[in-house]
Image (cartoon, each protein chain N blue to C red):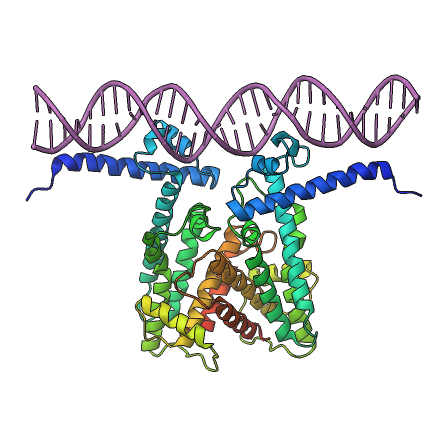
Length: 232
Length: 232
DNA sequence: TGATTTGGGAGAGCACTGCTCTCGAAACAG
DNA sequence: CTGTTTCGAGAGCAGTGCTCTCCCAAATCA
């Protein structure tokens, strides 16, 4: 019942090399922008370009790996930030979640651009990415769900939601493990999710330059505004 | 006092060629994604690659020209859509504006990605782009300003805006020609602007695939939600 | 142990890219 | 008609993604 050590040596070397390539690629991405050069990565690792193809079948596959990693990294950061707030403080949990996501994005803007910027040409999101990509949304649903259970969520009233939208939202919520959330709440959460993404993108992509200077405060304002919108 | 016809011939030919290059570039962008190949554009025009450099100093400069055009195209589409609604119907004007922007984006997704996706590596927004880029925001301010004047805008109450945010927002509004709008209104308009952008980006970049199917209805819901948020 | 399969790096090479340079011809100006 | 400007052609450079062959060392099997 021993682990196959011999194979493990090779496997470990391979895993090591793979993560080294990804790491160098991330550095190049941060340094030289999104036009990632496989050859440059190989050079920095003392490799010849063709050697990299033993680990990634193409440049796109490398990028896909980086995208998957970025989704997971963002998801972990979001979950950790949110977890540090007492469960009963649903408003604080939302703020922490938003701030955590923004902090991660500011710390790794190129990886943020990778997953939330314009999609890469040849790239079609593989199955690996959809689950980690949903982690922040799942967190949002968990927060409003808790708020609802604790009676700390103001249910939206007078909400008119088209039937098709209702169906779509119910499908999404069911797929993410929250089949019982009221549709108006879902609608507002998804609206806030788009707002959050838009706010961060505006900041990181420089769309507010020479207009907003105190980005921290502006982002916080928006977080609170959407909290109110969601009834938190 | 005649126009210099002789020079005009050359100038016209040059303008013609310039716009042909841009047009073909747009087609390639739509066909083959954002990795625009100058040589391919030249080939399609029966030119050798170096000839293109008589018109654009670099690939980046061509892209910049396309970006400026895209901003203006979007601005014009937004203004036209908004103009078709009676002035007194401020709610309808907001809906028309949002739908117009989305329609333009869906009709030219690659140009939308060019201006609202991740920024191009070497590219720093030149002065030419900031004015056309602001046109949609100016429209939004015009709508809420009209709504305020006509008493059709519900002023937000209980809004707490940090001092630095207040200053930033006032600066933005003043720079866009609406120095007298109340800060809470401004804050909500800018929040809605980010939401609008986020909603369109999610749709176009496929971030809601297998979740939302009736994109029209979902977008309309969000537009109405943000209208309420702005007091329209 | 010895033979053999396998993994992975090196190197050459192909087609492509952005960009620069020189050259020549046409269009313009005086 | 002469000189100048404009602009396309072509060659060439350095870089790219990717493929192929070669080859060696390490792991596997007999």
